[in-house]
Image (cartoon, rainbow, N blue to C red; front, top):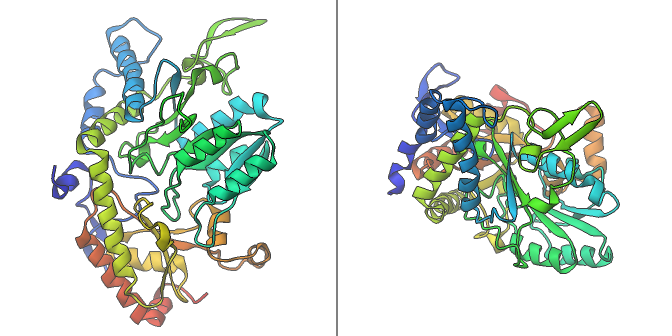
Length: 438
């Protein structure tokens, strides 16, 4: 399939957006790291499936049997997409990656509560805060925000076998850096730990293979969200070894989690059903299955190549604009997904985002992207500076983030570059209109 046809696969790419002057222009969405629009195939299948929708695992009616079959078959679709062996691994459906990580943290707590969890300085809050009930430490990043494998190994050695889990993002939602997850897995396993990869940003943009259970590169746990891969209908995934979930009470007990109950006795059912309390989101699971099928038909390597082209094209254009600071490392420019953070000197990040939307219909994200410690580090801010800003109510630190989907084009990027040039050349006029100086 030609990349020129990718736009035809996505719902709503040709809508018009209102500007501050009352005109309407073609909307441009460069905020795909937050969420993506649905595939046309997903929207159509969801509508078709509505005629067959019913509760799963609970009835012998025709619709219930069909819904159950599709729901269970999707576990196989998901497993195949990331090369997970369902003989030894389980696929658990949740709401999103955040819930998946919290669930895993809760389930493992009794087993690992006296051990150490290694997170990193570049994590999304969802892969940091759920682990803080454990003893937690953070693997460092360099001044460009790139993860240090040397520090990971040093910490694994220093904790002398007491690290139980290394939990690491597959790709940063701030800088777009792709972490060397297989090298990290080898190190974790070498020192007796397991590894969890937050794949929310990586899985939609690149080939992910969790490897065989016997491989030193095996990813023990993987989580990701359907809403970042063109299926925004409320589903996420947690994949892990079946044995790690058995003989442990569910973190969220209720309907569907039990085999039998009396007033003084509970027998839990087996995973994954034990860990999917309540009525499952069948519609979301259907959407995820179709999204995976569509991504597979495109080819993840083809998608990755297209998005890499967009990313490098943008970086080359942005570097030509004066007063723009791009937060990236030239040494690993190939190891990234399609996310680019930047700032314009002396214009607040949120003002830049507002101008892009109000003047050109371009959607970007600004702020700290649910990764405050990482952004503060990239901005070279001390803890004291952060606290001072909080106490004085000063403007919050942050950046502007561009993030691409498969349907974005170089023509759209040219429009972005054009308005950024205008902003830089007319800073004060824009600041007077949309905000104030820092």
